Length: 391
Ligand code: RFL
Ligand code: PHB
Image (cartoon, rainbow, N blue to C red; front, side, top):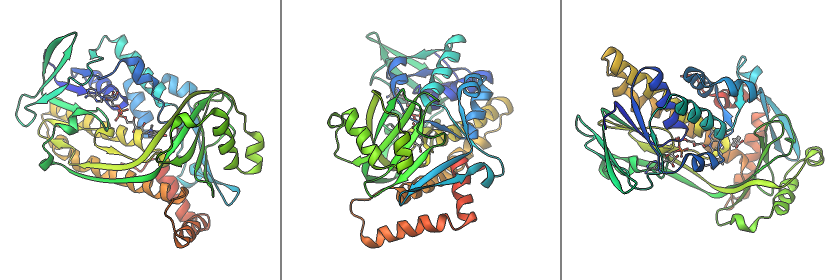
């Protein structure tokens, strides 16, 4: 088999890149470890910044997002028992975010890919290997139905997430990694109950962080901070709702509607960056190159901005014979990635209860929150990061 761009991973990064390239007339094949249903069963991001929405529009798959997504102009921070609204729209000169689940984004992109009969090879398990990406003719091998297959290509896009094979295929000496593991995780629940509030509530409480989010007007997504060694089996739905209630202000608590969970899982919190993001003809994008704690809602959005740079660089290569975009990809993408890292780390530090924190650390956190709400400039800084920094 031969293609122009072999894409590893059919998560949002891989599917987005695949469809943008298809629209530009550039052939691509996606190879995915799991089945489509498995990929769709992972409940992850919920908040899209404009770049992600614009890319979906450019793919021609934005219709459902515009019809069903919820445009949010603000968020609330809850601390010391009361809620404080941040008017993102006002503070950023009219910008907002769209609440539309990653599952739906993936669904829309998968449907569009299927409708065009574009090649996606699912369920290749752990058989994928990357070859000769330091030369002119990279190859991707995988096994399917007991047979080994090979794709010859011009470029490989490693869109296979944190645990993927792409980054792992790079010689260790060529890679520099940066990592921070937080001493807690988020226990998340998805339930078909109306959201407790029209906007997201990020809560800093003595019992730990909580987040009230949503997927639609009838489906809610809630999270509570839990210890790193916590097991999801130990959390009944009742225990979850009970703990969430304890982390809300009285008014919100009274409005909370509970119901059976349709998904419950624990996500560890971690910051990670691998540099560079290009090795010869292999380009890393999305979670394959960087992970953020979800507090700033940056992960999928950072992935979308990588895809934006990579897509334009590939189009320039094929249509204009101009490789400046490919040559500058790593540096450009990393500059934005690190800003997303900084914001996610700051939001995480601002809002969570750290087990080892001293009285001094807690006073600093309180002062950070007090300063934020005493300064329009500080609020504007939070808002411009949350809606997505300009390119
Ligand atoms: P993904 O989604 O991990 O997809 C990678 C795909 O590659 C496949 N794969 C392989 N395929 C072939 N061969 C191999 N060897 C392979 N190894 C892996 C995998 O099966 C998978 O299908 O990475 P991608 O596409 O870069 O997308 C990144 C996003 O998924 C991630 O950044 C976000 O979900 C992060 N995130 C959030 N981001 C936001 O922008 N806004 C949010 O509100 C937000 N909330 C969240 C989040 C992540 C969370 N978790 C669970 C970590 C909330 C949570 C709880
Ligand atoms: C979510 O709805 O899953 C979500 C929203 C905002 C975040 C993280 C996760 O910051």
